[in-house]
Image (tube, rainbow, N blue to C red; front, side, top):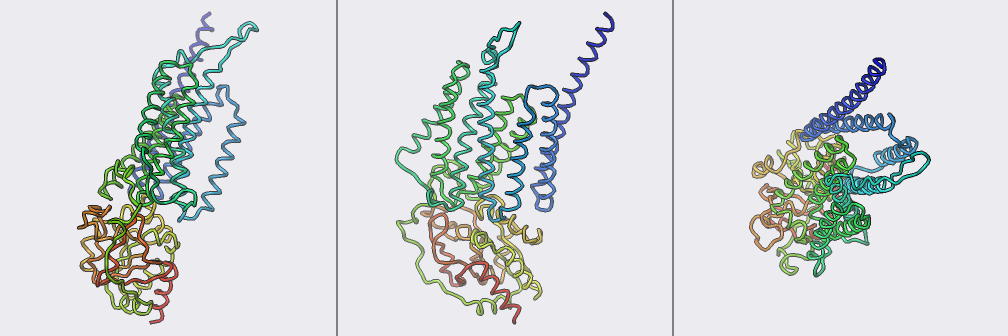
Length: 494
């Protein structure tokens, strides 16, 4: 009897020890996530922070895999197959997708996170619905749902709701970023759209509450999933290209919140922590993006910025001066300070490496070169930083809006490469402009401004840039990569 008690006590101690160790490993992974996020806040440590966060996720996955292999009735074969498929797809995308395609890639990743949370929540619900046990050869149905806590059922509904709208919203964002002919870059809005969004949102939340009251009502979860998928499309389709940085950050937050809800469904602390960190950081980044445009989140979601040109199609009047490569190179050669302002045009032309070579030509003439980075330049948060980092532009040359703006008045030449709305002086004085009040880069205060642009077409906000008609501004029309390369060649020949 004594031996049996000792054996039982040893088994219990072993089980508790294994559980405790799993919790400690998850805690270690959470610390790595936190450290990785902290490193991502600085350009000098961002790459290392990405690796640290990835290591944390690897640790969490390994711990979960070990837990499953320790006795849970789950086929490890299917798990391994899923890991190989997902890992293989991720490897291919990491190698083949260019840095200029990162906005679209991030949108797809957000969507994958959303649909994964939806499938986890629905799969767990179905699994609990279909549980059976065999007693003395008799198969008996076990009603696990009725014994599930209200918090688990509510988390199931919310994971389905948030995951679904994140998935379809991310697909729409991807289509807008990729220039799809089926979904235009401009906002798509119609009468009653806001009301329909409100009805779907409130209806989905109410149905999640119904699921708590009636756990066995599986049709409710189907309705929540269907409504969330429609809701995601309606929420993003009405947002213009100018607001894509905010949309990307917001969808990233949604995917994190959905993952946290899925963590509550599975009772997995690592997933809860990971989702909470992603959700919180996404909300903070969304707030930063909104402040950078001096607009509220509601205005971004429902304002429809990027449709028609402000003022009924009327824009700044005047005549833009076109400069040749030769004339521009003469002025650049005589400059002592040059500030380069990259924008989406640089990304589209994949001109970041040409820009780096151009800056080296300037530096060889003892010209001080800096880069002005606006928070919402490009199509995703940090877009310009990522592209310039790929070209090995020194981190210390990258300066944000607050750092660089006071330096424009002493700058000899400001070279704007494809940036539009973030350099428009109308934001400072034109109360009728949709970008009025948005903090901009004060490039118009430089002694000379050169703008590299394909044409005089307006930017994402749908308004003409009055910078182009300033007396100190010269337009250099053409593909950004071609123009910058020609400027470098002309400087080298002098």
